[in-house]
Image (cartoon, rainbow, N blue to C red; front, side):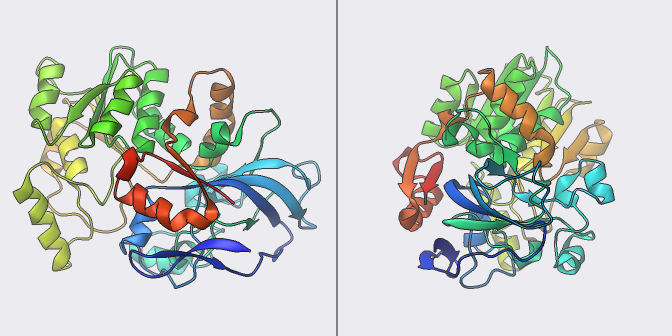
Length: 391
């Protein structure tokens, strides 16, 4: 089959790779009809996530048709011919974390949990196409994929909704929604979202759906801010204004009630000397992240507010504003998304027309053009917001 593979830092390559096979009783094989390039894929390509190997199949946002099921999969749960969306974290459904609906912390799905524990102090779940740190599972930017624990993870789509309407239930829509849900939004709240990429856009839409009075979009790309503004959100360009000052202006001097970091470890900063500081720290390996958005969210949030972090971090940050966090009674919440918890409720919101996931799709390409898709997405060419690939 054809698949998009990691071919070294800043390089992907579509190759012929072996077809996946049933390895365990609860596996299924899915013929992929749609997949996507995610912002967190760029962390792999940019070399920030260790343990990638040449030929690893990328991709953790995918859906398609079940073509084979293992003998341990109950027929009532999944059958050949079912149309499914596959969540990016792989959950066993039986451990203590899964019982608590903390699916991205599953204790049984990552065969390389020991490596993850050394990095994070605790095992993390297996993830499709996301390095050997998270299990070395082949990803979904391919014609077929093996899905472990297939009686637990995939969501059956039994309506006539298009792939484009439901594909993002695999990751970015639940991630954005969880970011807003962790904010405990009240009807009078002003919510500021750092990052107007796909996850940020869905965090904004989710904050609106959950009742926020105003949602502020913070980014530097005009086309991303325009996309947010068309959806009814207030744009702030951090290269044109001082973000904290502008947020104070918009909130009567208090700051936003709730702040969402939808950027993560590769953040940019409008001030060249501040941006240079973190790049130097990275170069001498005294930190692994660029936490501009996280710092700014903590310093901008009003006292007693909530800072929700859904941007990906994997290592160490410097100059964390612990004093502002502690002395102003801020609540900090975070986590890889527990996608399985949100898939059905968000599918219902899509069916009711409350959220339109298709609004962020700007490019649809055949799988064989994945390399071009990564290039235009990473470098924000052609006003690229989200790339969907068709195997």
